[in-house]
Length: 488
Ligand SMILES: [Zn+2]
Image (cartoon, rainbow, N blue to C red):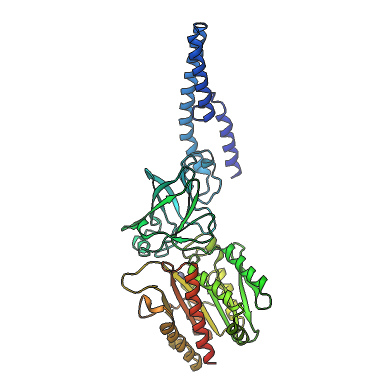
């Protein structure tokens, strides 16, 4: 990288030999002023010969400058592409020079409208202009099905305008049906100064066989963030938990189970009575499944609240909530994976009987679950898309085979929890039967090895933003806790 930057600086020095750079504003200004000056000089009927020489010199330098500019851009674009480490680079040297860079997500400066996804939770690549006021990009997927999330900024540096943006599947994953099966769904937009996203009017989104088209009205000199899943970024989620812990020190405290591979603390909020039955609640195994994270934020708020029945709950249970168990994946805007390409949902990968799960973050979770007795486990995921074969809010749920519980009392508790999920939540709004966890999931293994019952809920992000996700997650939590406490 050092050598590449030295080469880049050297290339800049060579550029300074061009006498009049006809591409730059300053170059054009000098050229026009000099031409007008020569014109009047000729009119004055004196020094015609000198004026003619100056005019020829100016024309020559102007067109030579233009030729140099074209040649330089062609060669330098190739050279700079070679040193740009990819779309996540904030200050791509090619882009800072106003050139195209095939590795970088930003369009060259000078375009009135340009794009970026180089921020926490950002996702999308290969932004291109493909027509008048029409642009195109692709999502960055992880694997089949998990290749639908996008979150990018549209910067408008000109007057108010309207643009159309085509959002395509990731050609590297090449799962067209997996991508498009998540749509139609709510597209959320937020200008930078808002603290809430708003759903984009349905008439502004077209769903085609392989891509979406999003029509946007852009205000003058404003940036608009566009996404299909309302984010709860890691930094914001941590700040929220710290605020709760700071303001409610008599009712809750922060805790950590360790750091992610990239060094981010996996923090949670704890409330209740030490020694009482311990309930653990998580979200974010699939890191951009934000409705689960919003649900956990609401649960953290609830268990540390001043509500009377919660005071009684804190006396009867110890509850620990971790809203984001895969912080690296969330920051990187990944659909399914950790920074090391592990899917934390199928925690044991191809070895369901292994001592520990495969991802470093899953190992931390496993120790947290197993180091003390765990009485109840709650996990919330999400998916997207309005279904035309079911009823809103299009949520879902998973169960483990009940035969996994060897202890009859635990088995009975689990059956009661399954009844609660089916009858007292929106779980069956998409399908009347639950999906079944595979052998390599945490839910399956904690049931089999430790007899720990679980509730596993899926919120549809197409019908839930921050508030609805919190409400639905809290409903599952409260009903599950009530069922559990009624039986002990
Ligand atoms: Zn998931």
